[in-house]
Amino acid sequence: MNSSMSIASTSMGALQQKLDMLADNIANSNTVGYKRKTAVFEDILTSLSPQEQDFSLPGRRTPLGFTLGWGARLAAMQTDLSQGVLQQTGNMTDIAIEGNGLFEVRTDGNLNGARAFTRHGPFQLIPDANGDRILVTNSGQQVVADVGGTEDFVRVPEGYDLSVATDGTLTAVGNGLEPIALGKLKLVEVTNPSLLQAVADNLYGVPANVAPGNVVRDIAALPNGETGITVRQGFVEQSNVNMADEMTDLMIVQRAYQLSARALSSSEQMMGMANSLRG
Image (cartoon, rainbow, N blue to C red; front, side, top):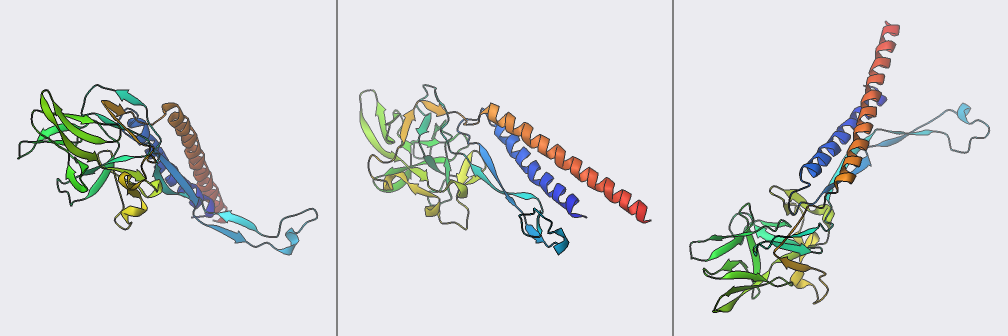
């Protein structure tokens, strides 16, 4: 395969990955809490090809030799954590975050299990074996709270409703009943979005080979008043996908893909012509 065919085919592969990413963004434009993905490209390899002294013509200001690139690849797919629009639902188990924060959840029902994070706040209360109700995501992941310095699931006693303050403080309330403190929502701030790994069910995690402290940090560890985060009960956050931007980007990438495909076809035809002349 000659260099032009290699460059064209490599570029097509990278552009196809971005097309898939854009399709995923568009498909989730109405998914609550979804954060759009962005692509980062980088050159695969560039090499300096030498030139003979005969190429040093009068008026040339550049040194002899020329740079030959070998296409680009998708280096990373990052999550855009910019704020989405908040929509009021009136459902007291719907919770949204304003600012750079994520809810912490557990995916296996074990407080010592795998940590995961989400902005998907349409929660619900389901009964547990002790007669309490546990706050979970629509996919069943348990929402974590800080209860007096100890991690626990959000447990609301039967007969009580859940009240959430703007700082994430949780209280069980009921008509004629004494309020019960339930702790505070466990929220984390993302310090390195490029290392945040998207997993299934609108969840995010930390790669196995990366220390969690290099990606997220607990909101509770921040000085008072410096979190920049507000918790909204009775609201959900819409996707931050802008359809106009995504469709514009989609057309640009499709055009680039078509040009790369045309370059590959032209290179193949030229190689065929050269082989026929040689034969």
